[in-house]
Image 1 (cartoon, rainbow, N blue to C red):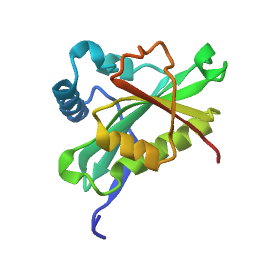
Image 2 (image 1 turned 90 degrees about the horizontal axis):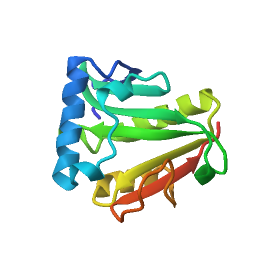
Image 3 (image 1 turned 180 degrees about the vertical axis):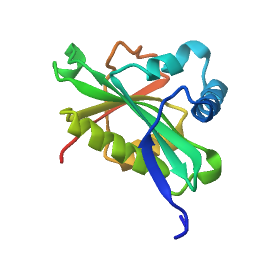
Length: 164
């Protein structure tokens, strides 16, 4: 990022038109990789739920990325530990390579810790190579399925223990 570029990561409503456009771009990308039944997407209405924390990345006044967490109760697949699930991570292709996704992910993790959650989980697709590299670079390790996701060979599951 050049020194005159200002990245701001902030909460935003998922039903704002500029956010919906960003989510539509993400959905189109996912739709090019997987069949609809193999995409585990939170729609705009689900992103407005009280247990969801939705953030946008704004670069020089333009929305260029987003990410969310969904606070989840403990379940057998997390040994009863409540957790935050990372959802809807996306950065526009034109601005990739600037570590924007890392910054969004780091902010989401900080907000989970502030909410008292020290386990972050996520499901991503096996064909999303950039996402897999991001999560592994940021300290996520592979785990088994959780939250009722099918183990269909298309999904890759990760977790990270968060600490202050």
